[in-house]
Length: 232
Image (cartoon, rainbow, N blue to C red; front, side, top):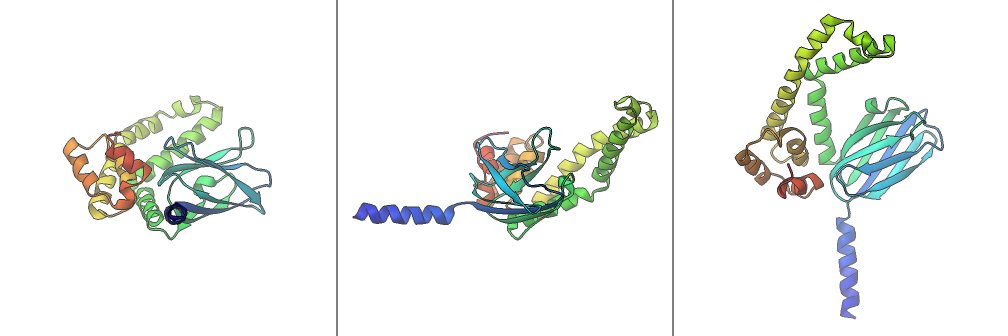
């Protein structure tokens, strides 16, 4: 009998700690039958497929942990598009248009999502990173003129200007990440910030200090565990 009650207690505890994500999306122009798939990017073999109805989709799933996940809308040959998110337990919503997934508005009340959106806003509004985005859009436009990169290479002045931007971009991303860590030492996305932008820039001593300051949620994330076990 005592084992029966122990099993009940353990199952309740596990249920309480389960990282349940509720992800609801609305994309105008999303047709029934379109595959909408959420997969992890941390080698956890997580994979879930949403049901599509009335331009909307929804996931309610148990995540293997906080980390990077990719949302894919449409299979190959069906106008596929994708977008990467940092996700953890909680409620997340997405609203936008089919074919413009990367511009869809993401929202959520959980601390990790608020910080993810804040850091994204910082990057989107940085002058150097904004310039890179405009130049990338121009690259596509010039290439489309000829159906190849010949159109791009014909504008030598633009090629020269854009080539000068790239060395500045990496330095700026590192600087923004370092500033974020200094100003937000308890943020739940700090393991992600370190892994994405700083793991190859940090000295061993800087890495040790940064990992020691991680919040419990960040330390226990999939990315946090990778960093703590020496994955750089």
